[in-house]
Length: 241
Image 1 (cartoon, rainbow, N blue to C red):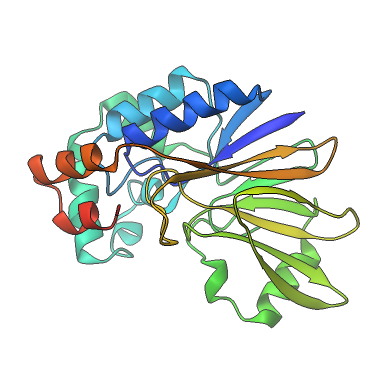
Image 2 (tube, rainbow, N blue to C red; image 1 turned 30 degrees about the vertical axis):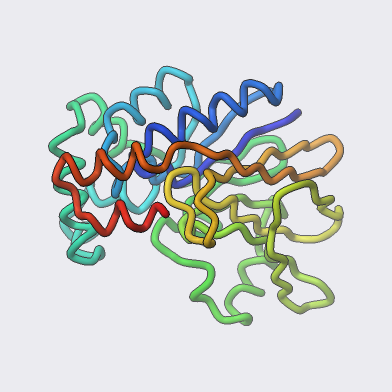
């Protein structure tokens, strides 16, 4: 069973469209999403509609959870709050209801999906955890494979001889050894933050235990121009490059 895992689309329709086309060419069995489908980007309604039309299961991201409570909205910085207000204005009632009712985690075929940190944290950044804290997370993971987003960085954390080991994920294939806990950050479709502006996602082959990291080019200038022309914070456009 091959599963394409996408995350952090952030209202970037151009990036999502190219990634879905790439997924279709790869012949995967299913696609799942780790949340933050909206926020920062100029096409939240179109992105949510496409996710729903394609029947792609998604967990809740921190941008979606901001719609459920003022407390969560206040968690964001000022520019992100501006983006969230604009996002709400551009979402249909049906799409807003969808965002507000996403689950905090999903589990399927020997792995878990959560936006921030297992077992079910939406807001926690794993890169802000100490090695001790991250070791506890890895040691308690059940199942022992979890896919996350949130940081927009491609990384894999493992527990080896009681020590937390960080493995950067490059484009291509990597074998995940059985008998270890693996916490895999799949990067971002709509707003990578690793110095490479291609859209990123991964494909997990559960039979061979091979992870494939995909880099997909798209026309960044189109999305950036939409952000500026539609009055969204210019910083969100600059960040795409």
